[in-house]
Length: 381
Image (tube, rainbow, N blue to C red; front, side):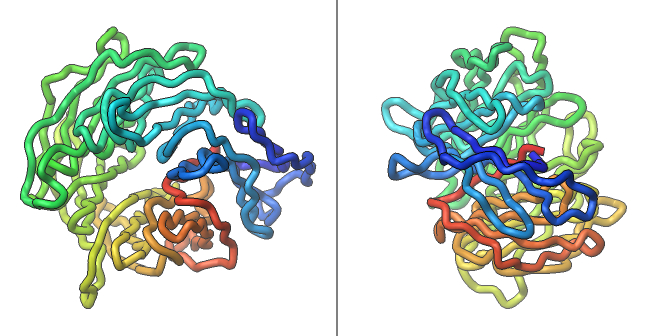
């Protein structure tokens, strides 16, 4: 949420106790502009959980409030109206993982309800275009659940649970399916599911008018290079190009999408030529003008990598720089593309980089805040 005033927030029952501070009206070049965002984390103490923060380019980060009720709310998304927020609880065991919904009102979150994710370690959520259903991707159990969303934001028990089968060549990571992302096509409404364990992206037909909206028989299966480990993916606005990050091999696959099928165009490494260490590619993002693509790599690299996108959708590497910490699990561009915020999970830090919109390059700033295990950033534009 790009805002002109500081909004004190209460997430459920915890408040920061800060008073409202009216700012002057923002103009295009006004450096007092600020950005509000949700931050998902892993938790170990009561004060941790979902955080609401503000980033001001002149002043840095403000922690507005924290909600400690959800356990490991590692992935959080709002609806289009931004009056609802949905979060996973990335847990396992006898009770499995969970999905919770919240009302969002003037910077305050109040819990609506929680339902089972029908699997272990849910790590990704997607609302279908109608926003009548939310899909939860369960990493450890290798399945995903289709959960109805009521008009009041209340979640109902899953109406479909789809389990993947199979394995791939990496004995440490791919003994079984690991569903890591579920993304809807921006126009035709099909659901694409990335499975790190089976080296596949599976395309499903989806009709939100049906009580059980997912056609369980796959429409198309994309088999990526064995051992690659597909993780997250992003479409361009036209829905013609798909960029897929390969976690295990630290690569980006570029694909042309047409009528529910994917055609491989190229694969680009995230690594510099002289790199010799462990890797773990994580997040992938497009700039607002879709001229640049950004990726993060963990392991011993701990880098953000920048590519320029050609007219044909292919990638040209232009920059690799340190993430400023350990394990850049997630990062995101501000809605206007002026800054990139990076969440370094294992160094408990959130950092800001200034972005050059002309050439796409990033420059570190002095702005940072210590946050326990930050793992997902979602702006409220």
